[in-house]
Length: 114
Image (cartoon, rainbow, N blue to C red; front, side, top):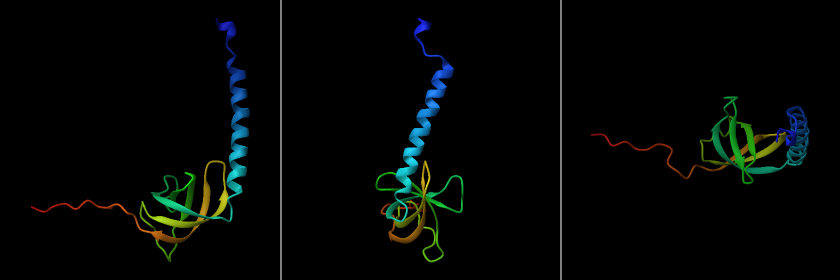
């Protein structure tokens, strides 16, 4: 039965080739978005860089952008207009233009004092 399996080194080499093709394709699609203004749902502070915010476009693409002094840091759940400045294989980078809508949900749960 083991004769029917593909050797591990062949599997690894094929996977690396596939990953290269997928990353190249994603990079080309993301770079095609550079210069566009996208509506982004703000998720909050980036996990890797606390000076940046993270959000998602309507297509679910991850966007990292810095808050501006003019608009400040929009809270999670806010909608913002972001101009895409760079495309990477796994995310987009952008510049915040304006906050178009505040979050529609309650940010804090009121606590009754007794």
